[in-house]
Length: 65
Image (cartoon, rainbow, N blue to C red):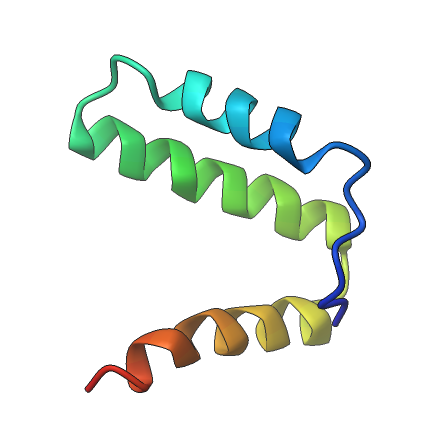
């Protein structure tokens, strides 16, 4: 799992992400996020790496409990 920043222009990516959510309801926004996650996971194409990413992302919530 890569943890270092590899995007050439992360600010541009963030702006595109915000633009994609603009005007959506909370439910639509959640659906967009789910679709994006599935598309990106498919691009990664490695079940082990995707599982590691899910676990790493979920750990942030485990620390708050």
